Image (cartoon, rainbow, N blue to C red; front, side, top):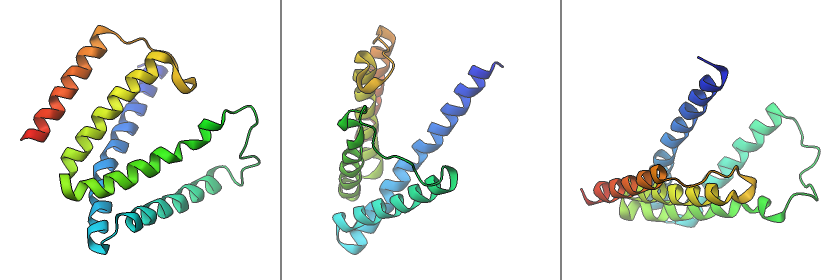
Length: 152
């Protein structure tokens, strides 16, 4: 097995593991919101804990950052946190009302559509990967799968 192939398997396994965390996070934080009767506070707790974890990992692996801002970096690269906050608040609010499976299924579908658009146009400095009939077929099958999952 070549280095690139073993790296591909490692990345795939790592992201699969990360994917396991999304419904677990949704269930835990949605449950917290119900128990404390506040979506906003539950989301703030989640994001605060995440910040502490991220800072700890950063300090342990990289030390204190020398620079947080690069003038050559477009401002929108610093705004990714908006999507984390939007996701956190919406998944926390929706999950207890719609179910973990339903909520995550539509998140997955949204991710697949967005990734296809980002790849097609090479947005945000991503490698450009043209949409193919195979990718379109995969998206249609995934969308069908989402609708079958939420209807059961």
